[in-house]
Length: 133
Image (tube, rainbow, N blue to C red; front, side, top):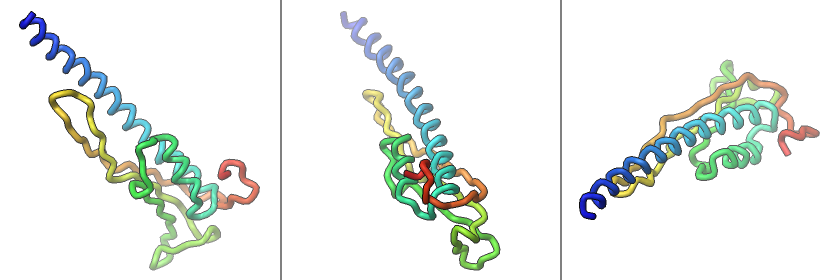
């Protein structure tokens, strides 16, 4: 029984570690998809539309607004400010997201790298646009 207890605790720790690695890869993919969705919404919806961050959080529920940065790019302007008529692109970044493992005996936190997606401007108007509502 003692041998079984020792081997079983090691086996189950490794098994949970493998499951946790799958969760990490799923989270990595969800973070990538969230930035893609955010960039796609940012180029078709109004500038700083509140639905952009909310819809990104649907892809990755543990995501908070402070992790998301939406930058509207206008290279000719010195202060990088732009309107729907003058913007040339949008960059959506996800930073500062930490993944917490569930492996017993070895609790860890893994800081995911920054994810970023940049798309060229489309029409940036939520009026009559079902994607933005």
